[in-house]
Image (cartoon, rainbow, N blue to C red; front, side, top):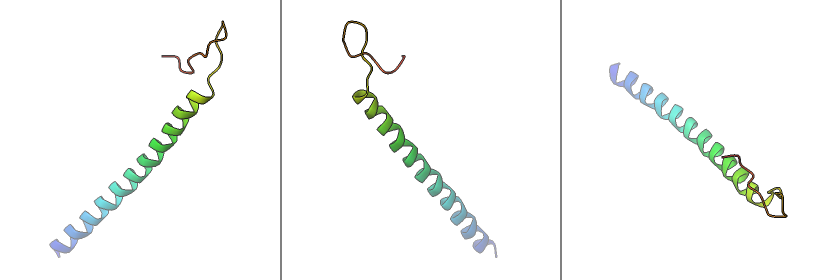
Amino acid sequence: MVPLLLVLLLALILFGAGFALEALWWIAVIVLVVWLLGFVVRPTASGGRRGRWYRW
């Protein structure tokens, strides 16, 4: 009975980690796309130069 519970607990942990890693991959892809779009859609600064789209 104990080995069965250990296997079920391990499967539950791995399923949870897999879901979390999948969600993190999607978040990373979205952040990368927004970051790349920031280089394309930069506002023009005073003097006609291309400004920075981020504040830091």
